[in-house]
Length: 232
Image: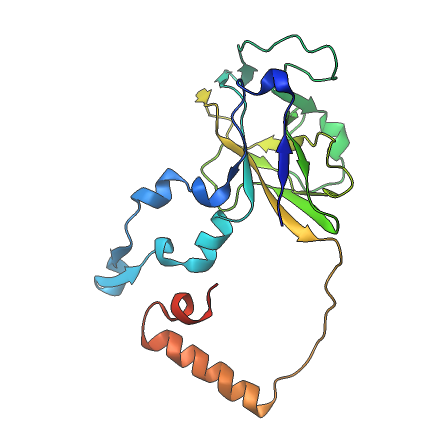
């Protein structure tokens, strides 16, 4: 299973490349403590999110698409200045940001105020997946510190591998002023099978109840059981 990311040759040395998400974990994860004292529990030592394998695995899933250039935000407006080349053989815009009108989201439960635009990150990479695979494009997992929220979408990576998929997003921090730096992850791309899984509803057998209880008791007895015995 491999995602192939391609860019126009004129942009090869200009834009940062997509990267495996596991190689670009957020700085806050690196700097946060692994354990803390919980004052509300009399100073008891508790493990933090840093020791939660499911959260870590979600952060490292698939690939991240980076912002192609610095975006300067001043007074609610967006500015950029980069040496985008003249490209005559492909319909590529030099604008790293576009916009969606609020009317396009009428009826959707999105936090768009009157006259507020939804932005759209321009993606300069085509993304191809093997036959039978689609690409789930979503906000970078567990990255609430970003001043935007990328909306989720599913793209047929096995059929649309040479098409450009751009990323609609909501700007969620109206007080943000400064620079959103080049390389900031704007979308996480996760391959999923085209064939949808079925669903079976069942009740536990006595043996399954006993096994489930044993697992829960083992998890409570010592730290790291899930990571050591169940994680791949």
